[in-house]
Image 1 (cartoon, rainbow, N blue to C red):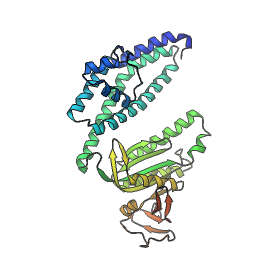
Image 2: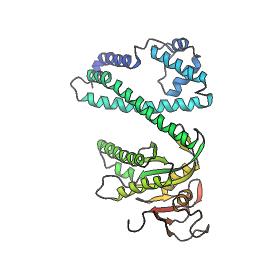
Image 3: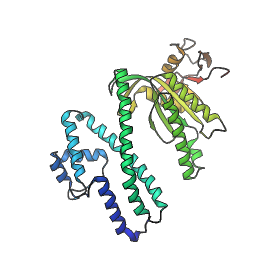
Image 4: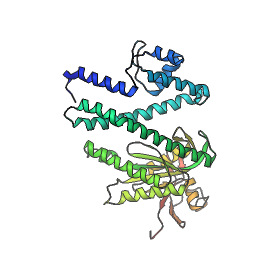
Length: 347
């Protein structure tokens, strides 16, 4: 980008981009925005803080007319009871975090394209004007499609948010991520992680699952059908064991039981158990809890009917093989029953 001596030109371009994105130059203070929106200033400040906006002083003219309209719409949702006092903070924080990450990625993408041009600052402004309206329209489309899917799940299950539902929870974790990442250049590491996320996400979606989040070297997803989670986990671990496949070596843990789904995330003991099982799984293996084993095998009790730490034993169903493991001790669970999941012999 430009040298420090071009600070004035950069500031002018930033002002142009800001005015374009906000629908006009920022000319209003906090108090003026709150007054025009007929919203108490303290409520406005709290909402901006929850959204993660940069701190401004009382005298900073950092807001535009679009901020007035946004604050007015938020106040409408509060008055309508859509944003209750209990859900307001969590929902607004979720909005702020999600869009902040998306914005950082999008600006980095545009900046990378602009950096290759003779006049990158001007090119960045041109890209912002030409690309962002299209991105905004696509974001609205994706949001509406996900709303449709969420509505379909709600009507099918009869469950609202913050209500426990029975589902399969699975973590898939890259084996040896820290060691391997040290040997890669930055661009290679990015390509490696993006390849993992892309293939894992595609596999989850192909089996009617929902990716909850990716956390660097790990992906968390859920499915209504435990067999779908098993198929995803087996497919990914099998790819990781193939030396000719660039997909990294992974391990997985699956738990099946009651889960609280809230604001796009999942909570509860079932989630915790799936995470703990992933941590003890060997490279290239899938480990199940009692709930997932029972759902997949049709056997409610342990194969030997005992609570003792017996020797591992294999059991078969028409679709899978299960090896009962000695009870594992992990954080929060001192004697956790677990099974290793395999394909049937001959597959």
